[in-house]
Amino acid sequence: MAVMKFGGRLLRNLFSKPATKMYPVVPREYPERSRGHIEFDPTACITCNICGKKCPTHAITIDKAARTMTIDRMNCIQCGYCAESCPKKCITIVPGYTAPDAQKVSETFQIPEKPKEQA
Image 1 (cartoon, one colour):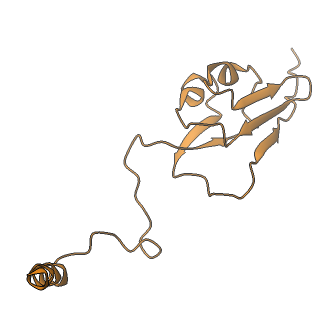
Image 2: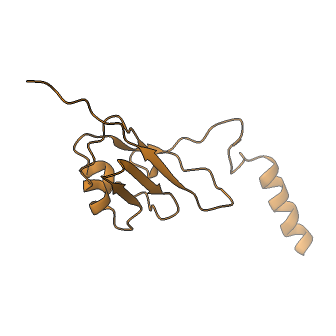
């Protein structure tokens, strides 16, 4: 009796479409407004620290004296609050996730000094 059930399932699977896509060949398409990873443009940053205050997990820290920004990727939950609150839009959420790694890594970006405008 079990052979009959198996035979029916075998025939259905032989003539149906595959349930999965060809991942390495066809890249994954992420739906609009899906969570992703943080991209940061240090040239536009004004070190206001609004993004660090809005982050619920404190994954973003800004040191104004050293002009550095640190993103702890393992603490980030990709909520997008930092990107929404940034006045200069130097933080964006890009579809797709960060590649897995064997070690916990935090990225530190050096924010360049802005030239003072002479009046």
